[in-house]
Length: 209
Image (cartoon, rainbow, N blue to C red; front, side, top):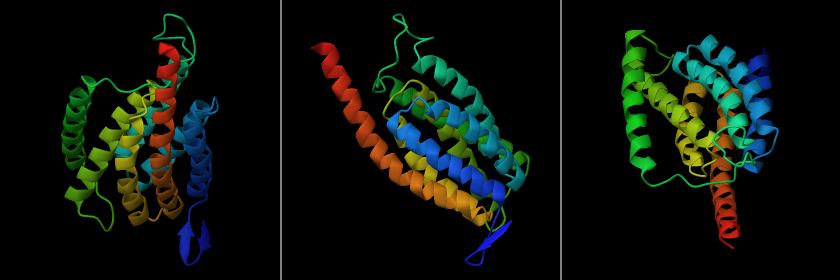
């Protein structure tokens, strides 16, 4: 443990935050290193989340780890591609939007009920509120990771909603490095929406021409 400006920082939390910085930059750039970094960061946050009692988000990190393998296959065109070419940037079809919203709502309620059943709570936060926040953020992560694997630019909207929740949860639990990391993530969410949407439109125009 390291003390900085009167805050006690966990070493594994700092390492996870550093990996997370490389991760978000790679995601923004859609780099070939993104998915390997996602695998590594998911492994770190499985340990961090379970150590501080974020059981829903810890379970989501296991899901993220598995989805990273799936994402590699989709982006490389190994699956879901007739041409076997690298997957282009895309936009979520309108018909999928209400389906994804409904899935998020159902998952939120289900996870909230499960967390209340397990009596999960975080110091300094009302147990009912923390269960809702943890459940909602976890539901968004499930949907967001699926959209990310499809390379939809709207996946950034999911993370834009998740980051403020994670800032609160990690800060209240004393994981300050992770809390600050998610503040940085929020900035990248805005930049990511602009960048990925522009690339999706450019690739659509190239395909039509």
